[in-house]
Length: 373
Ligand SMILES: [Zn+2]
Image 1: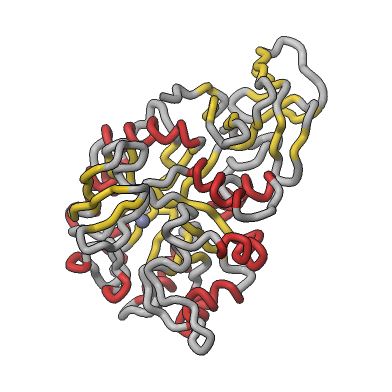
Image 2: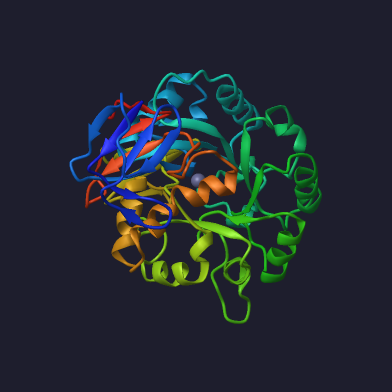
């Protein structure tokens, strides 16, 4: 049993001082008492919150989920600890059927030793609209096809799909009926406002990197963005790197989607590395000035870190620290139905200690201190 003292404890509702968080694998208590026979950890005034969850990350430190090797998953897992991330969805790309299958098999058979916990897979494509392919290679886009992924339904937790494409409605209906735990997210889509709204009635409950890879908001055709902003029950995520969307939207989105807005990185293999030439989904990427772009200039994921996303969002809004941290803890955990994300009794002891600048000093996964490098 361990107890963290002298921390500013960020719960889902407030920041507590003078409290003690006690845990083993799971959180045991959060109160003012230090139990007997506990190992004391002095947080030296740092902030303590639940570990961060990234529901959309392709790679880090030179490795990509699509490399389909255990080494790639290990390196991604270990390298993102320094960003405060303690669990993530390994996110695939639109590539050949064979490569997607390999990447899924790799996650399915992965025996994790250390590093941020692999929660499962976010399938980004290949069931998207070629008109809004972004950095996904259009030649591998397919019609929604359950057969491609059916053997992997135990690990698939989220699917980014363009609902308006042929067979989209049937696919969404099938997933909703047979695999209701999977989050269906509209993204890389050219859906109109009406089509997006209709897809919510089929079972789409989230939007992937709102504003990016979809039509912009227009006052006569509000599109996906308008449909999302209007639908209280539908959540969305954004890449708060100050490049993918203008920071003026942070305040606005917070006001409109408060309980439904999640921060992601969409980081690719150059994440946590020096800038230079890289790769995504079989295409060359140039990383310069914090931007990752294909040779034609298309944004190709990001090199954002999740703690930087928090810092950016905080700077341009006036939200409380609890509300901010909820965007990478409570909200993604609730969306995926996980027993992490809260500093409450019975939840897994995934914890992070960070300072005023959101620099990560320590983290714990299942109550065990991680090796941040
Ligand atoms: Zn992505």
